[in-house]
Image 1: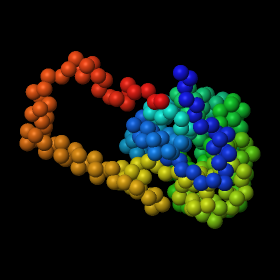
Image 2: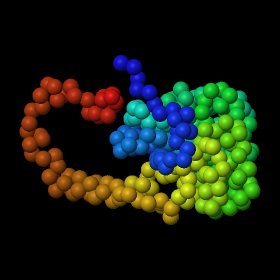
Image 3: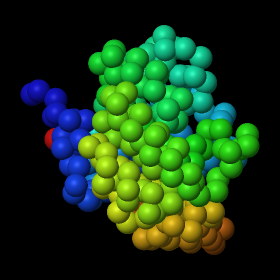
Length: 281
Ligand code: KIV
């Protein structure tokens, strides 16, 4: 059977003017949950560094990290478009480096790549698009270099932001993330660009909204103020571990039935992890 076709960047560009969700994903099980919930655009963000790998910024994340987690998200999803962040250092040195890194991500399963920067990133965007790989731009707060001076404060330099938006569109980006952009300027960008704007902390006028899944699910203690927590999975996980620990200490786990039952031959042969053994339709 032919592999299911993933949502294309052209289809996403065609959503300009409609409202649509994007969520980050870093592994197979949560990619599957998001896709089953009807979210068809997944971002393997380099926020991976903080929310999964335990660093305090995105800076240490490398291409190998992004390739490994991209492949996991692709294995866990079937039709979603998988945007992948190009990590710091993978695209800044030269157009050739940028194309090489983007190709590595595509080989891992990325359907498009995302890189940070407005006017200053246009040569790289054009080079990667020229190599046939769709690109999402990212302007406003740029987390990869924010800690070096520019900071995480909301961006409100209207002239620069409008110039950045126009430049990345002209360079060939098919969508642009607006991170922590003043909402009035984000609205102006959304109205003036022909490509969809994907907002994070940039107000309601953006075409799309993206959130980090750990913020949506309550899995990360330091959620930004603009993120709504739709669940408290961190608390649920802690309670589940507490119950397991208590049961082991009190001799309630494993339950008596589990140790006395002789497993059937079929059960012994069954794979332990259903997710790795069950191909997606
Ligand atoms: O790394 C990331 O998760 C991002 C976002 C836009 C949330 O770039």
